Length: 289
Length: 323
Image (cartoon, rainbow over the protein chains, first blue to last red):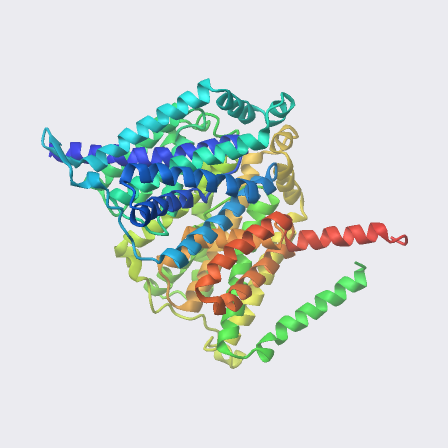
């Protein structure tokens, strides 16, 4: 029983790391462009396909393929920001929301058309390496998820806090107009934000493709949960996102394992309700919106 | 537009709507028109919440579904006729809408949107898993049709889609008149004040929470009645009809038509029910085109069809010297 518990907890942490990578991109895009990007899950899906094709088409090993996919998706993210999202900067939130719904529908169905619906698996060389300790079993491939997640978060935190670009990003998030007056190239910051967000989502997608499966419709469920992470994390800082994603991952995994698997997609909502009841004034600035 | 011009347009529209079943008598066309009517009810009620009160809700299909299940279940288990069961469905949706509104309407903007989206997911999960009540993904078949006393004519048994078509027109008209009545009252002005500037509205003594909950409850209730209509029209319901995809669909209809107008959501619902049918010949490309069209539309016509038309008319009238 206790082993099962720890096994589920471990799965929860792996799941949480994946949500975290997607949620961080959403959080950055939301904070800096003030857009709820419902198409973010499609970046994650396309990243997974990019990794798959880099491996099957170019014969690149798994990790370099993940990096290649991240670079490709960064360019794709910049393209999407310039062609799609730049048109609605400063418009009401519902415009950005519907624009991203349109983009999500477009990308999902284009992928469906080009890549077909049957799920595929990324065959990474780490899947064969089994580890076990204290009666827990996992493959190196799974262990890679929290490790890569932690490395990317550390890198992102350093980037935001200490580099000049990172500081400019924070300035734009605080006050776009003041940042512009201070000489910060706001549009370039938007592009960089999208590039970073797409890279993180792409990394998450690639790892999901290795552990589970790659399919054109894989983005939608993840993006909703990542949004819950962003809300629970309080829109405040990266630390909040990390904690919230681990909580969501653990609740989903343990709840699915011990309470009811059928209702596991409902847990994030119940968690949100619980949070509202405990903090009726709203979650850390949640009422400022 | 002059008063006479407006009356002429109105009368022409009414005549066209009444004659449609004669012009397009195929069941397939009639079905599309009835669905357009149901969507118009949904879009009108969501327009009250989003367009006039400014609260973005992504769970409208949940109330639609709750109304459908509520009405279907009471009519099957207690033998209630549609004319009573539909109020039960609407009431149930309204009550849940009220409860959700009380809980989440203190949130704003994106936070509200995402929280309501998750409520929508929750409702779908419950409908799919509460098998004892809802039969889960299998759905509920054999929902009775509405019926009227037979002496009222050949349509009274609701055997043909023509009867449903006229009933849908009545329902949409009722919903439109109700929303219109609210929007042009003191209540409506309070809602619009909340949309424009919530803090200012509150400082003027408008109890914003109460008004927001009111709009949310009424919108949810109307969606529930639309759901009841759907259930007793299709005669079968299952959870897949009431997912977040449908919520987004209705939202797009509202914005496409023009969310701060009354005619916008109706027009948006009609166009976006008929247009995808025409796109069917595009086959697998259909949703690709739909996504692209949605993006182009949001960028170029952010105020919707009715909003853009109004801007054009205002511009022309201000340019012509006679006014």
